[in-house]
Length: 322
Image (cartoon, rainbow, N blue to C red):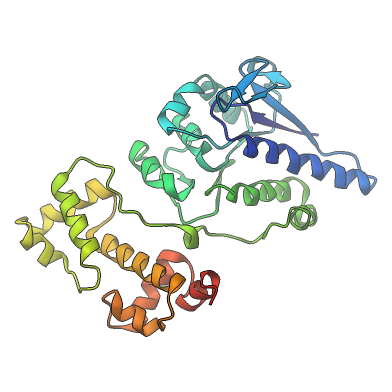
């Protein structure tokens, strides 16, 4: 019997807790229907016997408390809501327990923004992790020792798992079911819950919004310049000259503030503008390319696919109802 312990965190997203329990419960049900014994023992584990959520609108009633729940094989850290630093602080009592469980051979899976609590435990140092794309830059900033791969839907590394934004946790839950009970059960659950089992990236869903959560006012001005001038061909040298900096100083300062190189930032701004045109307009790919300042179609296609994970035509077909 595999014991799955779902943490009853304060500021947790209730759906991520309920859905986690539901997935493993249905796996047991399908086994029962096949006249096989249940595989998973599912328990909600918390600091106390009642945990209020959503300002008291809901409350969780854990099956066991932390000091009773040491015999576990898999720990699920649900998504967190609100300010991430505050939510992690509210749940700091779990951190030592999570680290001890991992040292004893237990696997740990964080769903979406639950990655912030897993990162706080120190277990992700030097490892890959994903989270909701909207919070990826914040995670990079707070925990620079982690390799945040926000383009990925899930990560699986040395018994530590993470999932991307919101509904991406379904893919991680099915990935875990497949690991413990096989591909056939994962496919059965994917069909039951109507989930695309093979989604590997969340890149097509990312909205690039500027990365201005820093205090360098000059770099913010340069970012605004890039965003206003995305139709033009911009070079690092021209931007450095315009703002009276050496190229080396400019690139170092820009990367420190935005966690992107200047070239990466320019590319992401141009691709975001192209995405909006593909989503809403009737222009051809060539027209969109010209509008965002590219002159070589192969380069444009390559940059677009690297950032979004999709070809230009596939992206347009996915989001443009026309």
